[in-house]
Amino acid sequence: MRSPTRLGIGTLVALVISGCASARDVDHAASARRGPLPARSNGPVSQTFLVLRPRSAATAAPGALELRVNSAYSSIFEVGNGPTGSVDFDGEIWRTGVALRTGIDARTDLEIEVPIVYANSGFLDVFIEAWHAALGLPDSGRETRPKFDYDMRLVVDGLDVYSLTGDRVGLGDVPIVLTRRIVEARGAKPAMFVQAAVEIPVGSEGNGFGNGALDWGLGAGLESDVGDWTFGGGLGWTDRAQPSSFDSSSLEIDDGFTARADAEWRWLQTSSLLFGLRFENAVSQSFGIEELDGHVLELDLGVAIDGGGESRWLFGFTEDLISESGPDFTAMLGLQVDF
Image (cartoon, rainbow, N blue to C red; front, side, top):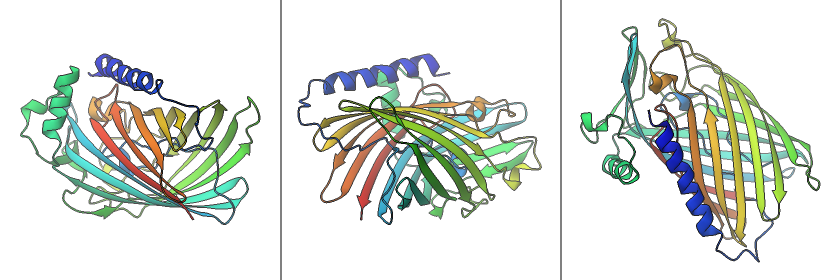
């Protein structure tokens, strides 16, 4: 298990970055909110289910159109054996979501995201091993397998119930999210919003890009400004639809539950530092192998920088803190454009 060491290292990294940033001049901090990082866990099975991304309570203006492109590249190593099967997830996943958001009224917006998924053996194995060695983290068995190997299979009761086809670009399932701000921020009172979402089964279940069925979910969040800081949080629940390939096995998919806490520091007039913690529960706890049964807690660190016109760039990385079931490392790049 990586829990105590990873949690300590992750906390230390956050404190170091925050401490270094505190030395910067904040006299000209801007009022515009730029966060939070719209990250989600990028695991091979979990990415086939609906997850509500972190977002601000601010909604798009009526009739306005906002483009959001969020690209995440993850190194995956989740390998284990149990009494009823095995997990062999070894490779790298690149998931890019292209989303359009438009305002319906002064408090409500609608967003549709088209995910593009690609997986292969990648190039990060040497970097990840050096990263783990420098921070004193275990390699969790990486040394037992060839470098730059690729295998993304879940075997239960002798059946291949999930596999992610490598070296192929595919569409993932398409989430459609309706967000309604129900409380306006006033003084110390935070803004609050609620969400409802469905995920349309567009991705190929056979190639591992989707789960082949409709997911739906509900969420709620809040957001409050304190000087140059914004603090937020949220909860989400998803009715995860079980793929047909799982039906003949003993594996049962659990409903999804997410929780998050995030902070933004508007340290300069054109940029913000972003921090976040995200929890996602296990895909299934009926398997007995922590690579699938383990919950995920991820630390997000990033920066948002205003570009020309009505655009903004996001840069960040994510480190899994407590579980074998999340990606080892995720790098993020995002672009937001308001039309």
